[in-house]
Amino acid sequence: MRAASSSPSRPGARISARARASNRSRARVVSRAMRCADEAARAPKIAPPPHPTYSIDAVVRAALEEDVGDVGDVSSLSTIPASTRSTATLLAKATGTLAGEHLGSVVLAAVDPELEVEWMKRDGERIERGEVFMRVTGSARSILRAERVVLNFMQRMSGIATMTAAYAAAAAPAIMLETRKTVPGLRVLDKWAVLIGGGKNHRIGLFDMVMIKDNHIAAAGGIAAAVEACEKYLLENNLKDVKIEVEARTMDEVKTVIALLDDPNVPTGSVTRLMLDNMSVEDMTAAVRLIDGRVDTEASGNVTLDTVHAIGQTGVTYISSGALTHSVTALDISLNIDV
Image: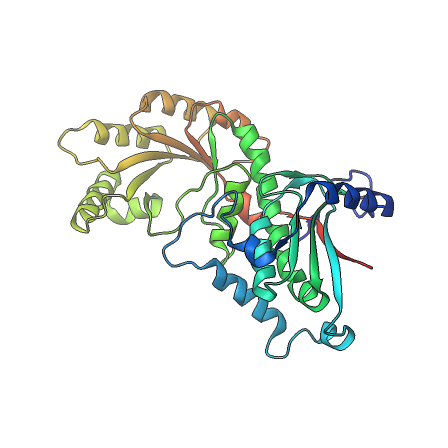
């Protein structure tokens, strides 16, 4: 994964010592140190999406364990005395939306709950290139053991949040969604970053929403048969909170769904959204007019920063894009120990 930079002329340009010193001075005025275990225990500014089986603490433990194996951080153990205390800072080397601040505290607390951390910016806030936005003080060994895991989570999440913020601003008044195209094992974190960036979450997995897509329609024998089977399944299994989204790829399929919604003899009470897949802007505009508020609409396919604004003006409720998570560029952030 390539790290992003906001510098147009020199992507790898270093941040000057003067800029670092200036940021450290400003940070001391506005921040307050807290024991990182206490910081991690507070409610996050923006909560992660709920999941019935996912444990963020378990993900953090796994990330830390894969880094030290069954031996430990041999670099720090061999070079740094156990009694050495240090202060380190996080430096933004690119401008973007911060995400992973709360998760960073969780990682630090998992390594050493006695570390003291100061956050000058919180999740969802803008960080500027050259800005110091966090300081941590305590055992040098602990800081360095946590460093890469904190950065890996935070750089990816901040990259997702930064991209989401750009898409969400361009898509308005439509609401920007991600998809299930996330890194295996990191889905909740990826979707959390979308929330932090100002988007909303699509379904979390295969369990919380029915999506009748082209393959389901083909296997079921058509849109009507697929909808009927879904409604029957949800009723029989008492899944009254699970809603149905139907995919339409053509105007004829849109009209088929509308006919089902309007037929009093066809149960469609769980159908709440129609996906307009890979349609032209003109067809999406026409489809929204035909649907006329019966259900929400979602545009999907061929969504880029160049096209999302025009799509958002068609009247669709939502726009979904897998690019928010599968094509993310990490936001460049570094951790530096102050000597």
